[in-house]
View 1: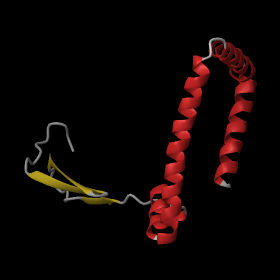
View 2: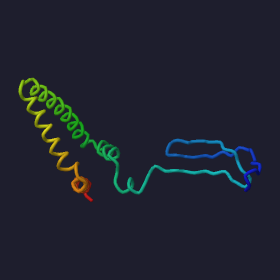
View 3: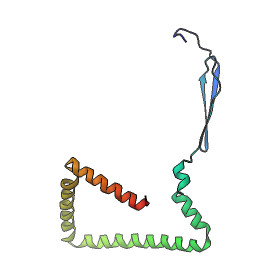
View 4: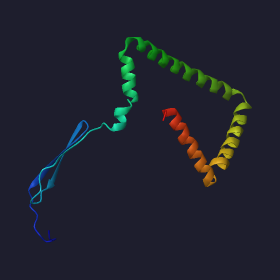
Length: 140
């Protein structure tokens, strides 16, 4: 096709289906081209092999015996959060302890930067440790 060749100006409708949404676009059609319909699914081989967290919770929620356990875990999480926030507030009210904890935090952060982030071989060692932990957690 030459640069100065006229283009047919009729409209070609492209219909894309992405998961639950439908997107329609209009573009000028060139002679000899056809309408295109593309469909994208949201499932991949990873999502088929391992259920997502939402699906797992939904499956557990559907079982009446497990509903009590989920409600109990939710209440325990709320109580634990409330207790830990009260504990931190109590420690914060003691005059000397917050300053000591802040100093310990600064020392540990400085050591961590020096040990793992300052030099390239140490950064690689840190990334290997993180990747090993992730693979242990996921069971790979």
